[in-house]
Structures are given as structure tokens and as C-alpha cells.
Image (tube, rainbow, N blue to C red; front, side, top):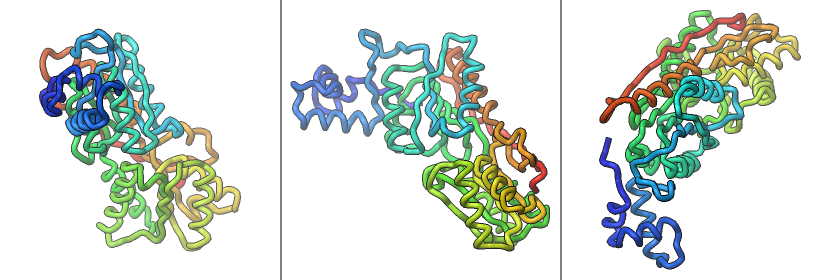
Length: 334
């Protein structure tokens, strides 16, 4: 961990007094715009976050764990939160949630605001952040755990799965079942880095055996059953000879199944389907869909355990990198 940046350090870098720096960061009207901008720029570029606990020392913190996730609209992140809550239940710490909408700039603002209240720990989904966010996380002086993904450069502690390997594993399985004309349907692809990694791993897995995608649909909107149904319909109209479709999420694969049921398309006789996440949504369908269990609750539990462990350790705790192994369920759709 780098040395925690204090207000006096920002003031020194800006060439102003500590009191002026404090007033500038609060937006006080008696500070010139030029000075305010200079102080804010220095604070931002060095990852400094003001302490908003009035009258407290900067070393103090509140009994909250900040949890920053892209969305609560999907079924994915609530299970991570359940794991975190279950572990923190018997401790003084309680989770508080921020939503980024898969936007790195919004993530930066959410994390800055949350850190300003000096939480006792921070859990954030993913490894891709703005440079300002990475600096804030490095300067946070609290346990920071990045979750869901291990394909990248963690700031500190990290718990997740390899989405590249998950994609490669599914490609290997699909090819082992004898399918050759294979399509991919994904959502939030420009913003969802983990879905993109699965796609890249899937394509690599096909290429390793001399195969390539027959068709692909990289949709920029959200996952939904309706979208999965529509995109499956479009892809199968373009490619009547398609043998298998791999989806970036179970929500989309359920939509694919709904299309097939409505159109009298046999699964897997006419086309095989596979998704990702092993969501509870799959339970009770007329056909068990193939999927990958992404260890969501376990990831949340381990993140919370690391935060509690780090709080109990006197001094600095070595970074934890925990790589979980997802499992594939064949279901009846492959």
C-alpha cells in the first residue's frame, strides 16, 4: 500500500495553506475559481478523498462496508450481496450499496462519495477502473476487495473467476458434443468487461481446435428474456443451419428457449443452447438449460471474510488473490 495522502499533502502540492485547500474542496465561495480548480485537480490526480465525518480524525471510520456493483437489475449481483451480508451479519459491519450502471466514470464518482465517509472496507466488482479510481483505491487505507474477475491487475485483494477460462471451457465442451455451426449472443458488450472476456475466451477456445463463430450478435443494451428471444429469432432466421448458440447470460438463454418453444424448434435436436451464471431463474423451466456456475455467493462470502480478516490483523495484510473454479452444468440443452 502506498502512504495515505493527507489534506496537508494536497495543500503542499497546490502551494496553498491546509485551510485554503479544505475550503476549496468544500466549494467555499471565498476561494477563487483558479485555486479551487488547482486543488481539485491535484486531489483527483493523486487519489485524495476528503473526510466528511465532521469533527473526527482521519484515521476513524464508520461501521459500513461499501459495495459497488454495476447493476441490481440482473439476478447476478444480489447473490453476491447475499454472501457479503451473511458473513457480516454477526459483525459490527454492515454493507451499503452503490450502483455504477457499467460506467467507469460513474463508478469513479460513486467510489469517491463512498470513501468520503470512511467506510471500514470496500468491495467493488471488476478490475477495470479509471486511473483516478485506481489511485483512490490505492490510497484508501482500508481493505479493498475487487470481485468477480481475476483476469487483470488487482489493486489489492481479489476474489473471482477467470472469465477467459470460462469462455474457453464452454467452447471446448460445445465442440466435444460435435457442434460446428456455433453462434454467440451477448449483451452490454462494450461496457461489461467480464462478458467481453468470456466472448474472447470462447473465440480462442474455438480457434484452438480450428473452428470459428458461424454468427455473433454483440448487443449494447441490457439482458432480458425479451431481448434474448428477439436476438435468437434474428440469428436463426439469418442462419437456418445454426447448430448451437452460446449466450453471455442465462437471462438471454431463457429468451432463446422461449423462442424455440414458440416456434416448435427442438432443443437440442435442432439447436443447442448454453448460458452463463446458473441463475435461480433456470429452476422450473420445461427444459434444463446448460450453464456455468460463476460462484457468485461464494465470491461475496470470501470478500467479506477478507475484510474482517484484514481488520483483525495488526499492520498491513498481504494481498489475497483467490481464484475460484466455475463448474459447467450440461442440463438437457446441449
